[in-house]
Amino acid sequence: MLIIPAIDLKDGKCVRLKQGQMEKSTIFSENPAEMARKWVNLGAQRLHLVDLDGAFAGKPVQESVIKWIENKVYEDIQIHLGSGISSSDTVEKFICSKKLFRNWKKNQFRTLYLNF
Image (tube, rainbow, N blue to C red; front, side, top):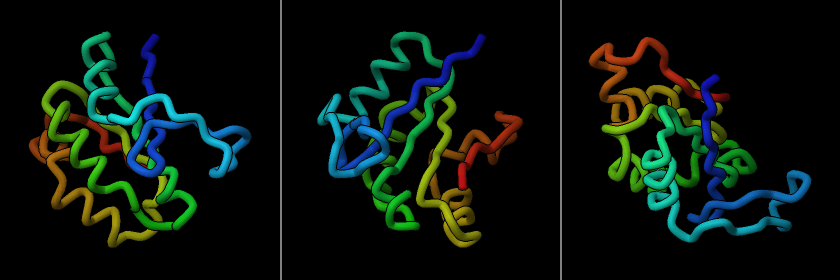
């Protein structure tokens, strides 16, 4: 069995929403990159990042936080990215410009994970 931990991002923090309501969130960490590193250290092979602000805005909002996480763990783990990716331009932007997908572009991963 493969367990894929998720980090939900809101306002630059790791959160969980109560019943999907943005105004009712619990903060689990103020440092998402540290949380990602924790999952890597615990043996996670993949990590799912959810841009909650992006989901509500319909476009990526937490790009700087995602980049911060990438810089800390991208060589050690496969990252899935979801929410706020609602156009082909956004998909192209992530595929072409992010270190997040460097290994995918080098064909080291068989699958590219983007959730729409």
